[in-house]
Amino acid sequence: KSPRAENYHRRPGASAGAGASNGGRRSWLSLLPRDAPVPSREGLDLLDRLLVYDHGERWTAREAMDHPFFDEVRDGVKGELLRRRIRELGRRERGDRGSGDGGGSQVSSCTSESRGATQ
Image 1 (tube, rainbow, N blue to C red):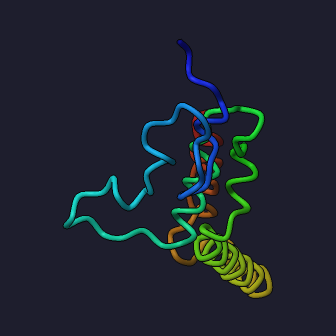
Image 2: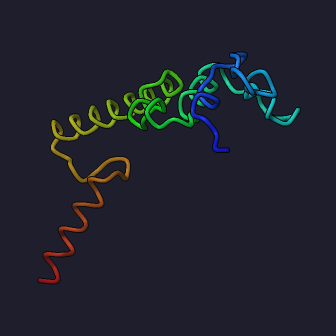
Image 3: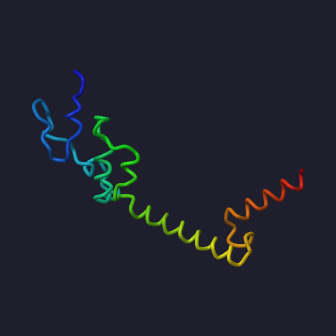
């Protein structure tokens, strides 16, 4: 007998309906070893939305990336991009494009210089 999709898409503590021997699915926390770190509420919610048997109900990668679990990472990336943009604008104002922190601008200028030398 094949498993039915409704047996896999339930919130913790929800009844599995007729024929379910465990009366509902196990919580994610019950699957962790005792000494494992406890995931955040957002992390558990994300797991709940991604690990769904029915592909029509399961979240896509794009939906997952918008989940609050990734807010801290998203904020950090936005901050880093802003810092890089500010540094780049400062270099442009000073006219010293090749100097700086060893970022991508040095690599691209070195590459173009070496191409000119070999041609």
